[in-house]
Image 1 (tube, rainbow, N blue to C red):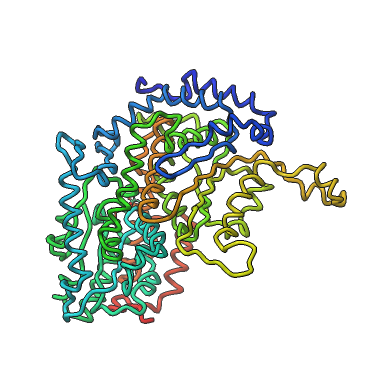
Image 2 (image 1 turned 30 degrees about the horizontal axis):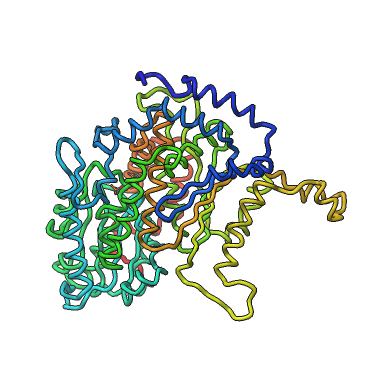
Length: 568
Ligand code: F6P
């Protein structure tokens, strides 16, 4: 497309806008009666089954969406990503998280260089290091094995690894390799998070992994200095070399911080923070906890989807279908949000991770060429595991606002429970809800049905469900490291598809900068007021009042306090 041409100016976009009118009087109840339609809306790949028959879409809608994809040059944009072009144009970088999980013999270029050997050098280094730590051949300053790991990082240097860790914790194979070990994550700069992380841990047996792409993120660096103090005050400053390692693209700053670069694990500027879980960002802490072979399976699952995404025709391409349907829901049906509802407690951190991947990627107001968008891009993502969500926000989803839902189900539970005499197993009980909810949303319940059930007249409006609420279902055979990798990559690529169609840059994040720089101004003021008694100046009335109140109410804090670490 020419630089200032927006997707909304193309014929397929206009055609889809008009098509919304065609569907206005079509209820999902009717669409679900068309078996042929439903059959063609089921797609399977490598054990994953996607059923999108409960989307408010016909086969004609899908054809129109494929035409939209063509108008957005979706295929070419995917190819540009895989071939290492600088599609993150505002940062002049390629976007190659697919290289992080590519097989050893793959060839993927960035700036004329095959990056796959570099990726495997780091993976081999992680494998060797994690084996040394796990086997006890790498010991702490007092000679004790390091059985606990605290990974310090925030945003993309935290949420993905936390999601994968939470999902693996109850997988029997992974859990077997994690016996007697703990992995914790310190993200928030709130000292309470420090307190929670160090509670019950002994510095003598703890390894701290500082994870930061830039090694400048304020929260991460203060937390890193805090845990450096925790280690050196207990074991002496020389213990830091044995108890702290780093993951970063900025090895100069790693060295300046005092971490031996031999114990630093690199990644590259072509890995976006929120797409970095398959780099050392995730692979190092997760390998320390579960062993490298388990994490290699996770990478293989992601790689399987990478190959599918770049080669399958759009009609059978799970990430492409997911992405196009999201665009349909947001831009044409006008539903701004999406609920991510995994029917698996192990996936409790999936929605928080996808929130960052999706909302930091696609929450943009201008096109990739800087043209203000006359349509909304991005969507509001939230979610909770089923069935917990059912007892929380599903009321709104059933009778309030329309929120397209992703139902994610698992065929075989990681932890099956059967009770003799119960009607079904515990997992079947969970899955009964997984199968029931999408139909409740799609079909609803009419006043006529309620009348037949002798529901009193005055309750009929309250008990009526309009239905016609879209969802899709994703069924995975099990939830092991491989499947977790598949799920991750499917969503990463879905979000890229949405961004490619909306014509935005899904790989930068300038929107996080303004708040950071204003915090710098406040930090300076707090320092000046506490140490020299300077009055609050240069802020608006509201902030001045709040800051003054905060300072006055905490004036008992000494100007130059001694080091204090949490004690719980
Ligand atoms: O929140 C903004 C952000 O830049 C994210 O994109 C990134 O994942 C996070 O901060 C952490 O950055 P770093 O890994 O450089 O510490």
